[in-house]
Amino acid sequence: MRHVLFVDDEPAVLDGLRKALRSHRHEWTVETANSGAEGLARLELGGIDAVLSDLSMPAMNGEVFLGMVRERWPEVVRVVLSGHVEAAVARRLVQIVHQFLPKPFEVQQLFALVEEALVSRDLLESPALRRLVGKLGDLPALPQTFSALLAEMREPNPSFQRIARIVGADPSIAANVLRLVNSAWFGLSRKVPSIEEAVRLIGLKPIELLVLSAEVYGSAAAGALGAQLQFVALERARTVRRLLEKAGLTQFSAAAQTAAVLSDVGLVVLATRDPDTFARVTEEKTRAACAWDLAERRVLGTHHGVLGGALLGFWSLPTEVRQAVTRHHGPWTEVPAVSPASALGLVVVLEELEPGGAPDARLDAELEVLSKAYPGLDLAPFLKSKQHEEAA
Image (cartoon, rainbow, N blue to C red; front, top):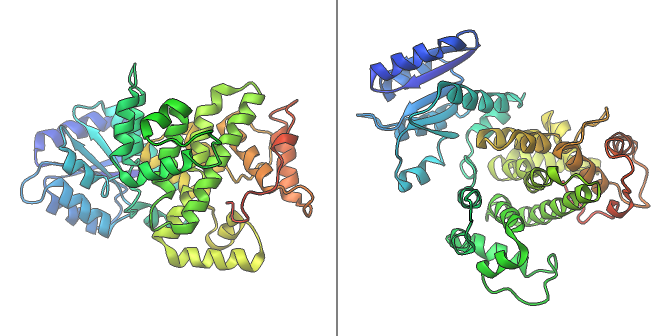
């Protein structure tokens, strides 16, 4: 049974929510508070899984209240229920809350959104990792430039000029994108001086992936590890696209490429938000001369795919993307369905199998299982030396 706390200064709103959620009384215990102070007092007693708060309240507004919840109970899922939110307030809130739900909303929409975030949180068996995900500061919500870019690309006629303005609004992201577009990775015959020209030359999906990778891996805190993981992520995205094209399964390509770019977001989170735990994982990786995910399993009892998948649940990214990130390091013991998850899993196994290297029974077994999901596909062109020893 989940315990969900609603905070609003209007008793009629709270009564309405309580009545509307009565159909979910076997899944949720609904509790209410008429102010931020009352909400904090209830949280002090423990046992609350999620807090949903109005933004405009007297004495202590929703922004202040939820900021205090984040600091004191980071594992609690935090949602803002509000009408119009000014841009400046929204920019501050993305550092505090996991989700926005604009008013008016359907009760089923509210229930599904909160449940999705809670299920993602519950994937993390370690209480310490739950607190880590809950307390994220740099990546608490879907990255802003990527989110704005997605909104523009969903328009009936997305504009190259508007896309260029969205990307160019953050100079560090724009510089990162142009650096990659002009690198050997794209192999263009001439230098590309502007974001708008880059969009026209390489297309919308590659620009989307570059922006996403720049926001996830390009922070100063991520440093050299972030730069390395960004290259690995983009290489994975390109490989999974080629694999699905060769298999005639392009309907899975967009989700698989997005998942590939996000596959190591959990590793960046661990490195930047919990450096002590990351240091222990790094020590184990060096001592055992093993991959990141194996070292993480020994230290944490889980791996960065699960951590990343939980974060994407807070971001409400599509289920197939979240599942692919969560499972990209397996284990694969049964033949899976064709999906973004199995395609990305296959790419990661192929990436880790070094031609001419020492036999690896675990990887060989996983390759055999995954390849059965793609019968007739020649995997030889995709089996190559690792791009980086540090590939996650």
